[in-house]
Length: 315
Image (tube, rainbow, N blue to C red):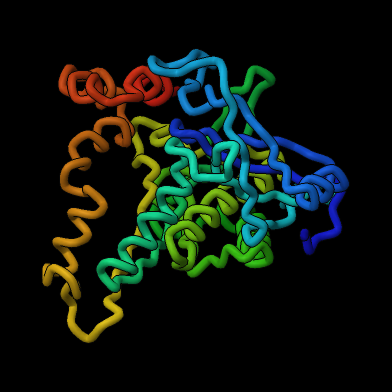
């Protein structure tokens, strides 16, 4: 059961397009659901939903997916108002088996396979680069919060440092420890380096940290954005990942096939095969999404319509 005294429970889930979605349930009802072995349901079309709420090819408007809560991921919502507990969930079918569209379950499964079949333990550490902006008119126009360069501390930065430190303290309270933080290259841009965890915990912590930063910025009347390049003339916003692979044996080779760790990771995670396709919708300039090569490479992808609409036309 929940360890927190809360009024509401927010069940968080993320479909393939990366939207961070939520179903809200009164705590009394959620507790009863746990006792009765019930799960909240969402339409299965969420697996093929696009950012404009259209359905990608292959999706259907019928059917349901169920949200399996991971109670170990529970944390108190970082904003103001009544106590709310947020819990990460995985997509399952009506029997409780992992749904094929559930990225979270795939991360858990892959991590387990690599440990079981190759005696390798993996840690991930994420770095969050984020830009803080202040509103300048009612129409929503925003300007950089401060002007600086990498690792400098200007007089403008000093004025917002209490907010930055508040973010770090709140993240530590929510078990999302920051190892270091500093100004980044673009105006108003800061970086927060999170501590390493096993893959699924690291991803959960990344989402928790991003939300916390956004909420605290809003409380200070600011906008925190993960836009990949809000200012074309300045550096873009990175999303770096640090990976650590440790063998559970003295040998740094697979105990089954004898291959090196580098070969194992390349094969199991498909890094080499996917690098070319991934780069075309992860880069931060308009030309990345206009080029004929990008669209040709994306065309074969099973979620090409969703990618094309959600990523390539993002603003």
